[in-house]
Length: 420
Image (cartoon, rainbow, N blue to C red; front, side, top):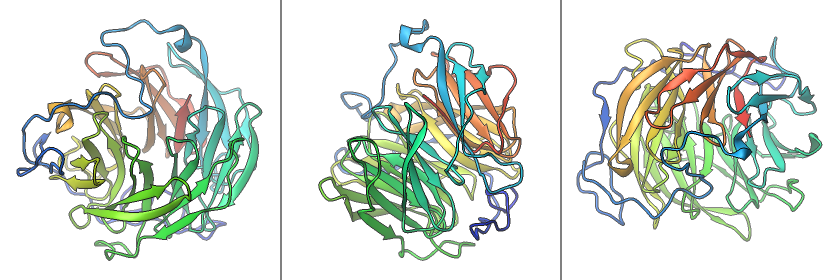
């Protein structure tokens, strides 16, 4: 997208407007390091190349494959469900949440599952840890979040976020709280999750009022809301204020208390944060200036410390990073690049402290908005918004190399592909 939103419209039934951004900048160099002066137990900040000992295990909820294994387990074989997010209020868009299946070995997608209707503009999807409930944003001016019972694929109910145009949500590892980010209003919300998976009334709403918006931005734009690997903090990425906010979630009340703020360089436009499974580092994709950043993270305080911007491998052309994934082994990271229409592969070094740019491969579609691993991480799915397709890649266990698994699957205005 050349200085326009990844929403494909000027305005729609919900009164939305395009996201507008400043021009992208090309980076130089290929290795992200950790900053000098960092000490263990505080906040190592990017530019110190020292090696940091790994933690005892992977991040909460991560399933680490056995090293060197290649044969799928019994649970990996056969047909598995794939849920597809789209915009329903645009020409050529979907009718709701698309239902498909994929072959866990070949990666082939079959689209005979129909559609879950009754959800407007479900542009982002997330599953409950128990696998019984799916949650979707309703990305409209009057923001809402919806719960869907997967055994029957029926809507359990919808709740207001209190903000505008929610674009991301996640489930707290406890399974008791839904966290959502409202792009339009620059706010984050918390909803309780009942035993049935249904959502209760909102328990908190926080609007990002400080710092002031970055260059080219008219206000805050919350783009992601996730839980840290240690489970002690929740972090909100805001593209409009060039800030990642750390909150403590009161798990008995569902309320938020701000702990700290991490600031990128002005105009970076941070969009998506992913943690290394060791829990000491995270990787931030900056949408506006076309960079990635290694961030040091202190689990004790929840403080995030961004390092220096690093290149995406897309060269001098216009490109907008969308999302970054990290393998559960902590060996490789993958970045989706809209505009360049590629996936960048990084090697992760020094127990998470460094990213080494390896290569980029064509995504086989136009404008990869969302990427996700299959549960066994042998497949990577990319939802390509402008080509209305989903590409599937085989992921090599040892090298991390990506190999396209056949022709992309046609799906109307595909902006999210969630394999279960």
